[in-house]
Image 1 (tube, one colour):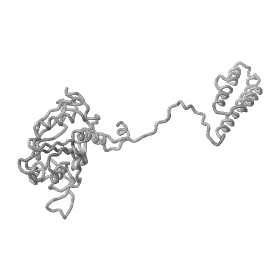
Image 2 (cartoon, one colour; image 1 turned 120 degrees about the vertical axis):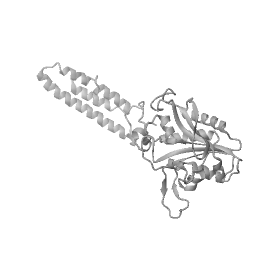
Image 3 (cartoon, one colour; image 1 turned 30 degrees about the vertical axis):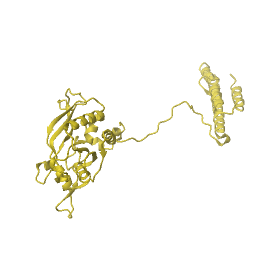
Image 4 (tube, one colour; image 1 turned 90 degrees about the vertical axis):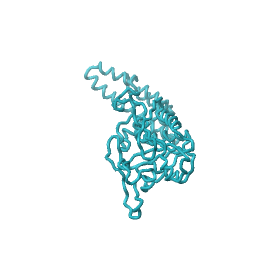
Length: 340
């Protein structure tokens, strides 16, 4: 093969090339694996040592020259008319950009509030710094009431409030008191928000957590209404046909008090480690509003009745997403958060 002739031929053909597609065909013809130049490289192996030494030098020089022709022509085409001519495959998929997404607690919050809004509930809010009256006294939890031992309260120092101390609210029930003080029945509300308790942090407890409490008051509300509403809400939140049961419980601001359980999401009620082999998971505390609470907000005696319920947002998120440690929600670990 005449290498000089091949180089001159390649140079001559470059003069007629005017776009990147033609240049790519030229590159394949003269520099690709099956080009004449590559075929000559295979023939070198069959030559004697003396021939290899002589022709190898010519081969390397010829290849280097042709590669230089290609680079110069490619640069020339890219600068043509001041616009870049990119030599890449337009059919290849593009690189996906990183995008943000909602926190799992935010997703759970939106799911729960959306479900209750569809059921006719209004979302109301209240202060996170509360006074002792709204957080305890008005809810039938008096100063000497043993139920106060259930709340590890974070009290705030304020010399102005000797008779009605301030604290970080331990639950969102004070929002219900404030709402009833300024609204007359009938109404349906939920009050989501942060709560604070001075307790040790572990897999199922945090000093700061979220609660969502609901309140329905009218002149003809009863437990049958509560049972139907909660069954519908729980099934819609978890998107599963779960069994729901109601057990007696005690809370100072309701009478009777109710514990709401659902069939275990993981084992479907058969019994596992998550449900302590009972087949049931407690998800909510509830009950009929205590008459004393209605009296404290100024409602006429025996005029209204209603029910209240409360649930932990983190608890629902753990069940929904299969998370076994509440601390992961506040750890800012991207390996965890990117899963949602």
